[in-house]
Length: 257
Image (cartoon, rainbow, N blue to C red; front, side, top):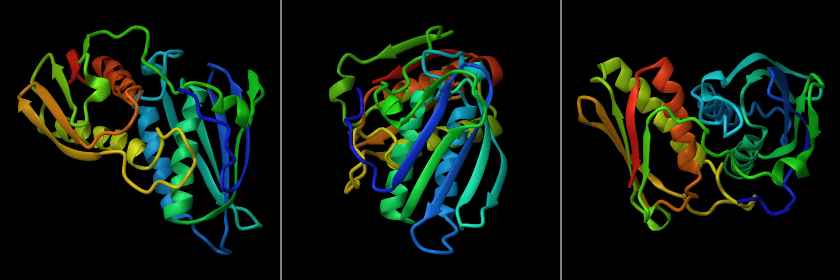
């Protein structure tokens, strides 16, 4: 699914390197109103960073275990804009579609923006502008999944899907709490407009997250109600599982039904 060409509701500049190696990305945002602190936008970025760190945004190009993102610096510039520099590794540049969608909905619902700039600080790959990023498909599933993945054949039409993660051993309480937060961050990618195919203002939520709970000592389930997002969004959770398999707790299977 590609995003149709459509002007964003604020001035937007994208100059990103399409490279597998680590890089630094500069994010500069200017509020429409003088003195805007853009607190909600920082929160939006934190969800995206968390998703990147847990492997969701690696797509099918990079191993999720190599996916990293963290803030190196944040400062206010003389013109009132906020400049954030992030270290990024193993994140599919197409995932910027998700970030742009989330920033756009924050513009409509929280703090209106005058401008946004996303720029790689090192020239180590093919340059991608806004049109090139929007022309790409959303990040898909990693090519090497180290556990069984089962998608219901009716998932495209399912409005109340269940996501099930079965681990090799029981999860400790602190492990389940971390998993619950990561799944909540994935929820936020959808709830904040990251997987929409338009930059229009969102008038209804694409889903309502239900409870995340342990159905068995080694099995976590997450319920969703009124799901209207694309099925490709579930690939982000498979990618997360692939990273957790090696860095957290091995998985036996993930089921989406």
